[in-house]
Length: 308
Length: 308
Image (cartoon, rainbow over all chains, first blue to last red):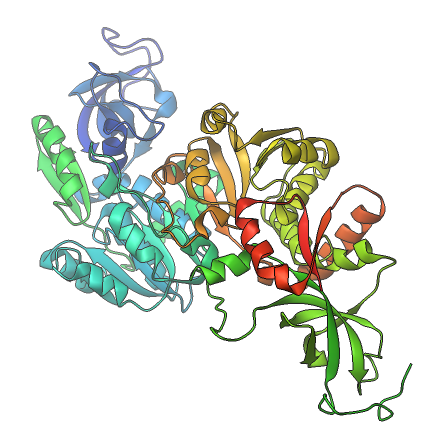
């Protein structure tokens, strides 16, 4: 480990780090921002930004020695000069353990925990429905609901993902949104106590009519609406009053003081094999944009990460 | 007071009362039920039913002596044989005090209390918006929010009601939904922390875009949608996620153990002149149906009651 002051300072300010990018996190909120929705905006002409994992290659900050792996927000480029304030050091035995900090132990995991363990509770014996159930957040939300004693049905696109949801993740059932009679299958669901929604749009509208009295809808994502077209209108809003529904829009920024509890739960579950989490590695910074837009189609089960 | 057993039993069973109807409560939920929405249904061919105040004219039940005033659900007819189980005895010095049991001390008051004092809190220094602010529920909701330290703007239809809301009820401001530029006025509101919604429809849709981050919408009524036409779709639902909104559909049936606290607060406020409540008396059972449908147009400020 090099000591501060012994380092070449060519690229860094006195309290900065030069970081070589290793992994980029691809997240649906980026599509929301690019479609002009949401509070977050990306500056036109500037590089995309997001959560990245990188390796420190130049440092004058004692707590961040050269060679250490760091997690934080950074531009999508091969190297960045970063302030240590927004960074945390991470460790991992292998690439999957390292990338888990962008998935199950990162924003997707904490988001799923916040929705299911905090906002949706109590869950025991409840009927839970999760959309994008093979996705980074949905896959964890469904498993957390199962751990909490709920009966959980997922929604995913295609036979491979449906198999992943029921066999690998262990949900009780999974509907295939590519089935020609998918909407009719929704209509046949038994009343839903908690709908953890990652898609919004027409699916949400249809499910509003299937909610139980006093049920909750957690709005975590609206990926059906992140295309440049206008989002489809909601026609079944009247059920909110008729069935006394609670609809809660939420995001990971609300985790606050619960962050430590969330991380602790997720680490414990992961360590004891009580939750599964798949990471898809896509090689090459040059493929990041195309891979991001493939999230709209739900190309992969699990968390998608670009290996730079 | 006549003793049980000393009464003629011609119309009543041994544990029943013959009640002469005095006042009928007219409520927006009836329009919702008639439009085919909601869980409540009225049987075709049977008399309308609702909350009524009546006077006991025949009784074999000691707790309900002849001459006492009772409140409960009954058909819209001049006399009814009723079970005492669903009835409560009420008192009042005059007609306004008696009819208050259908308004400020009854379902509208308890509904407004439940929304503002329980679901919306904390209210101090919050920016609150109330639709149907001259109505039976909205008028009380707005005043309760003021008592709790909020800055409260109402929405009402026409100059007379706007004056009632700002002068009699004491709200800080009131928009007139009959103004040609009403929707533009909504767009000019400062961000709303709590919207107490009695109308739904296009007004709600427009207000979704004016909500502050982490704001709440309490869905108490949707009178814009109680016509036989399809309810207008919601196009601004995406703000639920973008602004982390909570939308809560609720009804008076959820009051539960808080009923005593609600009644006590409302009685105290009324006694000390901290809340105002107007009752409109419309004469004649034969005018009840027409008067009910006039609620759709917001014909009266305050609570409307039919004097039978």
